[in-house]
Length: 262
Picture (cartoon, rainbow, N blue to C red):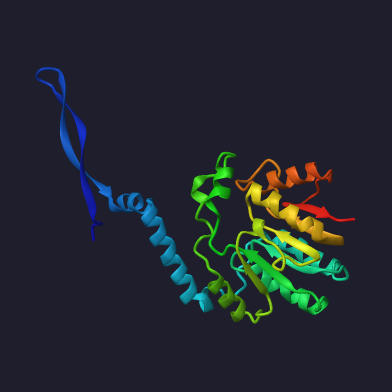
């Protein structure tokens, strides 16, 4: 069956051999409808509808789509994080994951915390709505593609709670909001391990300012997406700035920027 297509006219060159003159005449050719749909979907309304549909599908099909923990960390970084949880089991303070998306990492990591540090809470902080416009726009000027703006927007606190419940991890605490504006009692007095994965430069810096003073001696903060000389995400800019301001040595491990409190 032939595909449905729109018709557009383009000039086709034809030669008049009797007068040696080159003439043009219109010819109708097919233009794929998918291109038209793509243009229509690229507007604000198209984005809103697309992401709303994605969210509904995620929520309704969660038992199928998320039957396995939907972690987003690269495998080597997940291994580093889980090893930190084991190594810092004896360090006082709760565990925080700032920027948890669908909580796939939290599903795995909270099991380790519960088994080896049962006195600690596992707290996830997120907007659960994707990036905040003003924070994202600041990184567009640093080279971040505009197309990533809605990358994590098809989400909600309700969906994340559903996924956690499917995996029996109801003890994970969710805190919704802009993590740069956290205040007690949302912030704990002490943390032993913090996974910071917000991708953007300014919130990375500002969140480090909030959490570093609360990091216990011997505790560690892992900043994701700190890939030197590569990558779209600009978390490394905020990490470098914080280290420079506090006279801390930069430490990189498998794409993490690491801060250890002595």
